[in-house]
Image (cartoon, rainbow, N blue to C red; front, top):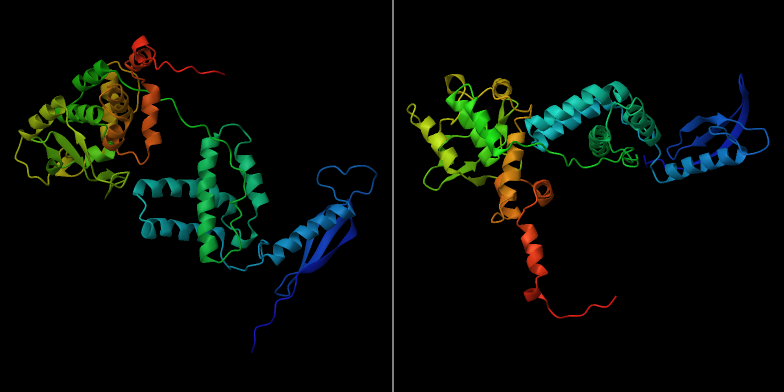
Length: 390
């Protein structure tokens, strides 16, 4: 049989008396022939402008016109019957991230945490086609109602929600993603970073509970390696002759993966780091495939235990309670202060995906020699003799 032709959407509004007064309703027909009846809101029968939430015949008509237009363009929520819930869409999204997009374990952990703590309690049992932009807007505003959630966190949650619904749009052929038009909170970029001084780095190294931990702290501060990259470092990645380290992998969330940038990189190895690693290399027989900083029985080091020992070393050295990651920031700020190092060199050494991330170190630690450059530019010998009128 030939397919049943779609009908143009149409409808009308009508007023009906309810227990709390008159109410405007709409009745309309979808292109597939389904009849829908929806409550618009309480009717305003007095003179003057109606309060928020109340409707006159004219505003009820405008409401229906908007619905009819959305139905005509195929963008009306509920037109498509997916038979799927939001919870099912979350399962599909996380599967897609892990297998099709090959996201890192740490990324998957963060996304699962957001869906479990925020998205599933709010939308888990809803049908996909019933989720609207207005509902998401109202829910998003509620997240910030008590003032304890930052805009940055809200933006992250909305980003994950958008990803879930965008994947659902493709899989279940939804007409549109309702999160696309949600107004996003403004998030100010993080500019404040805390770093160690060179003296504090050496004090931390002296307070380490073992020679291996001392070498780890030294390597983190003098190379800028992330903790997972340090844990995954193997002797084949240490080039004593060429005086550099190769970063080829990272070990986080009990899984070995590529570095965060996805690229292999080389980092110059300062003499103090080379000496510390050479001492470790002489302790026992090793192969190129052995880990530089092994855990028990030569396995990967327990990152949580390392962090506890790091915190204890901070206390013994009477240092500020900075994060392990701040050793990486220390590398960035110390190196960019050297006028012989370019911002592009630092970007490559730190494995940043874009130059904007590297620029924060230049803003945090401006080069003192830059003042000499400005003075030189205005010196009499540099004058061009041009006259500027304005």
